[in-house]
Length: 519
Ligand code: SAH
Image 1 (cartoon, rainbow, N blue to C red):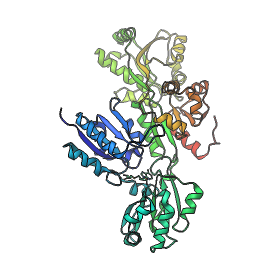
Image 2 (image 1 turned 90 degrees about the vertical axis):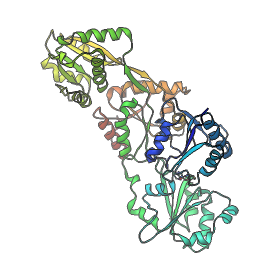
Image 3 (image 1 turned 135 degrees about the horizontal axis):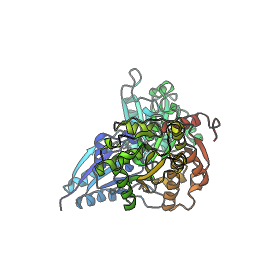
Image 4 (image 1 turned 120 degrees about the vertical axis):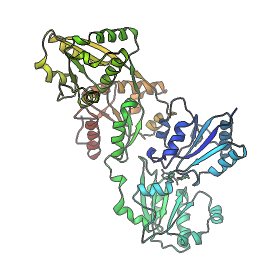
């Protein structure tokens, strides 16, 4: 068997966008990903479902793999001919033990690449508004481990040299030793007034910063109960934070926001949350795919065969539009055969989807509900007209009913199916929900509500609504909110306008002032 290959990849400090392009390519190419706690869970979600994932980090219920076992695992996987991505937090060469892993691979003649990452030592202070150098205050920096016992630290670190040789000192794995570290630095010549910052979980929703001086930081850490992992920054550069603090000022900073809508449509919401400083966590519980039921397919074919007979084609969602056109392609139906029909769209996104295919929608309703479409069309409808309604299998009945009431012959077509999916995320979502690490849950349709609850049930949660009660529930509109409430969820946020923009605005408004809107 040909040997596989191992990519030793730096994942960056946590924000999933802080991986390198090369690192992401290696991750996507891998047959198996071996990862630990510091590699952000969002990165794993970008993997195809068939990629094998092996967690080798700390976990309460399982034993932690020793470094030798990990080295061996990488060798074994590669010997099975697999392409392996060993994903490590930050940069793999900075306290990442990549040397040991690479060495054993070399001994077995296994090909490897080292793909550098953005080290937390620099990125985490940057996210706290602390550049590690400064023209006047620090022309060098050192990255130092704080991991070892005081004895070993003393043997490994020449405190006198470290204290005086460089400007900024960056300690990793040092929170538990903060007292000893500051004591040594003062003893060897740094002033007790030297600014110090501890930045915990930098680049993630939990990012928190504690600022003090060498003289008082130990007491402050104890008082705040400040826990690892954190980067410790020692030096005058810390002062820059007063003016350069940026991440914490963003409107959604500190919120990890669950995005439940279909992967194909999630990106807009995910990007907006990210832009506003929130941390999106995609957990798509719905998937749309072309209609597959034979009876429904026959109905589509028959309806399209009569393209010339329609006065209206009414589309109620971008999905509907997309699948309608896909069926035109599949059945070889030229759009020009709908020459009699006027096209109408519910909502700006549906209109956009039509426009992208060269069709200008007739009516843009003011409200983004099926009723709204009708309000703006009522004057134009005539008894005896025919309307084609391509939609999903879960579309609501309002529109066809109202059309029929006005004597319009409404032909409904289920052009696509909505399917429940349960994303593979290695139990991370359940873990985070239980730990209160999902701050907001967003629902963009009724089926995202029912599907999420069902997905959680399938993951082994017996009372999913209760599990979600620790999070703020945000709904795109009244119908979704009703479904959420009917399923035992307390809806805190409801968008004024049932659009992604509306939802994002409502999130930001609630974050500013939770009392301002309590629908
Ligand atoms: N190879 C990693 C460091 C591994 S050592 C890198 O280059 O970043 C683990 C230590 O890194 C932690 O104890 C902590 O000091 C630091 N660290 C990693 N990610 C961090 C984060 N998001 N926030 C704060 N500290 C982090």
